[in-house]
Length: 473
Image (cartoon, rainbow, N blue to C red; front, top):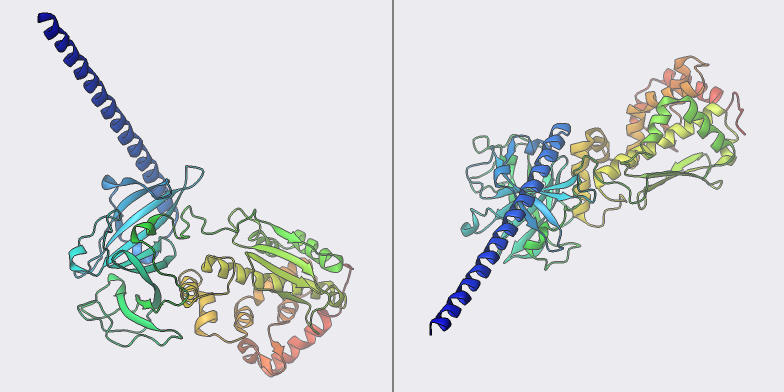
């Protein structure tokens, strides 16, 4: 009997040891996981502080802090992870019911991150204290994805956690009256598609119920070009094209300038690269680590009459500039260099627009894409926005170049020509293609010249654009 009891004691002791060892192993695993998560969070924090110091954030996010003490590592549906940091907004309105959270998505190099700030705006009172993106069961409301530098990316409306519509963003210029329910009192601005309810407005700058003119309003779109049915919890599985390592989008293949030039065009191009720092600088913007567009230079000897070169709108991140070698052969080298400078500026304008559009083409498939492009231009390239949107006309790009880029063209061709002629001559030749655009079509800048100035400019163009040294053949 004693022997049996002793066996039982030994058995219980063995079980106790196994349980103890298992618990110890589990605790060790948990501790190691916590250490790993803490390390990841600290690495992300160090990276973000540096990123924040080196980049100018969108004005909406200039006065907010990040609660790193409550940051966490979240495992996403695709088995990858993201660092999640609660955001403390110091300027939010009293009746604001949403919250913001910052996601940092590790890049492949494990050293840098893409960032997206998400704003959750629940419509149900029961979710007014929503503090997590993890538990979105029966979520009714809106989730907005923001880029910290450029602002609005996209947004979706959810009912019972299912996506039902996209959201469009409209800038507001004039003073509006906002009621206490955060809804705009006047009718929304006219648009070519149906707009629904206003969900957010006035940039948290509540001025006694008024509006200071620096805000935005979001409208629920009728669903044009949108397929519904997505789940709210899946919204955070990617960065929504936000960028974040300081680079924005880049063309999907290694940055390059595709040079398929021959004859006189090739000769002029090489001479420009070697003689003009302004031209070389413009070209390098298409050949850097973070370029948003490739530059393709080709020959097309069938361009329309009086067309020496043409810049095509970008397709799949490629901006093609075509030159007519036959027609270039009728020009002086100075004239041909002017054509190159003119077309490269067109390409640079398209490059900036691609950067704003965050995609490989400027053809907007939906109203949302076009609105996002316009808003991004306003935030990042206000001068370009002014001509493309506010003063739009079919010749908007030539209008902008005539008013703001003639000196740039004059600088390029003056260096190319080794300052052989007076500065006023290069400034006159730079007008080629920026004054008279077509029959009965002229730019405003040209119209503002006196009759004497127009005559003198035309005379210098005839003397030096068409005539003069021609060593490139």
